Length: 163
Image 1 (cartoon, rainbow, N blue to C red):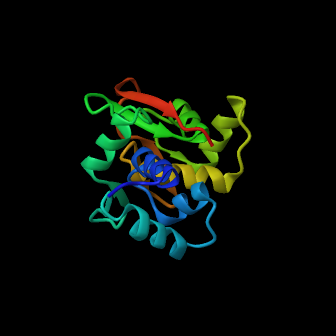
Image 2 (image 1 turned 90 degrees about the horizontal axis):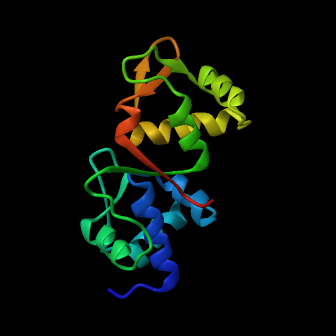
């Protein structure tokens, strides 16, 4: 399957954000609905993605190899390379270590603001969910959901995606 330039760039997004959801791809690809995301995935990237056991969108190994061979993204298979947004990178910097006290969304937001960032609370919630889906954060259910790193910070290599 030969990919157009647009499809190849969309594949880069899938590889970088995996595991991801329709809504995140919808935002990145500037589409109007999850149905459009599904159509693009099926029509343009059908051979290069699958859904994992949690129904999250993942790139096939062939897709990762293709975008790496094209020089569009580093594979980073030996290290845990995390391709994230600027907000997600900031969260990884401020959130509690794996053995630390878990933090609520509001606590993370407060720490982000103290660190010079001013995101909306819903953006923080969304970023925390995405980092949890990627296995970087642990979500602990208390009265409110709380979070902390699931892996040691120094084990992560952060690469910020261009928005």
